Image (cartoon, rainbow, N blue to C red):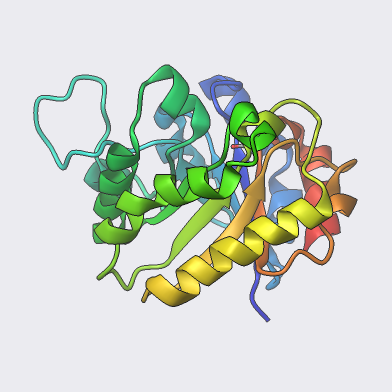
Length: 249
Ligand code: 13P
């Protein structure tokens, strides 16, 4: 049985001290939760926390991931962080193309594809976020939007044998408490699965993000190919995150 992936995206919601405190206060529970063979747990704090968190969690099976990576390998790119640096500080996963990066930092589909390729070259699993906007959803243009976000990614990664994860995060579901209807999710996941089965040669999995909470977990039953969750605000509180893992595994 394939394990389910639960990724906590802490965004810029926890300081260094708060992130360390989250893990020290819940260390034994995190150890127990991550020891289960049917779950894979990844915490994605802000960049400055990654190294320390990895040391703190060394005795657990919890992985530490980053929230972004530069599309460039190295050079004069003030403020950016390379895939190689992430590897050196013990990152095994990295979110790329989150809609907040696309919106506030003007990250393009091409940047996302280049960053994902750099991560694969460093044997870091990219968590590639895609999702339609509210307007695209209303106009029934989700599939076109997702396909166009994936164009560069599919060609940049066509020869990689590294595992990749695609996180479907409809922009209109992020932070709103609203999740897509089951029939809609099934249609999207079927479509994405067909694309990756036909086109991508390496291992891949599909996860969902957007208002995942202990209250919405029942909406995600029986979605084919759903291999896990990317959790925002509900991952900031350990008991809520733990509940999500127990309900979703
Ligand atoms: P919420 O779970 O707060 O809606 O955030 C989702 C998200 O953006 C995860 O990457």
